[in-house]
Length: 176
Image (cartoon, rainbow, N blue to C red; front, side, top):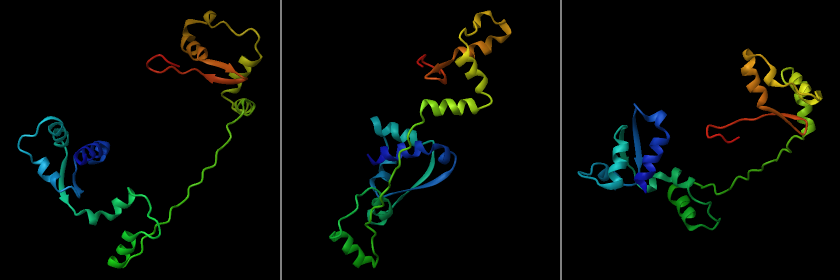
């Protein structure tokens, strides 16, 4: 699991790490041995191969020295936690066990009327929206000249729903 975590992390930060020498600190002592394995097989061999394109040095560090990283992956302790009390005594430090509360506010989505009003105030959208809204006989785009073919395609992608102008978008697989 440790090796997989390293492979995934290094690949995730590929843009920053590729072509640069970097230091990899880990509390996993056997990882140094694992990467220097004479004849790795299977999944481990593939992971090692993926790491070979990077220039890095592995530095072992005891797990107790990784308190900062460990703290990120643990739940906050209760106030009567023996471990935290012992750490306070041993290292002469206080450990903040408070949890910050994050509040979120939800913004009500705009109504169709509000969107339509904003579109009518936009100088680029207004003429198209008005034409679609107030034109009983919408123009037949087939009657337009060939030089306006691109414009035709764009206008076909535009449609009204509840008085709001939408652009129909198609993904690469054909879904809209």
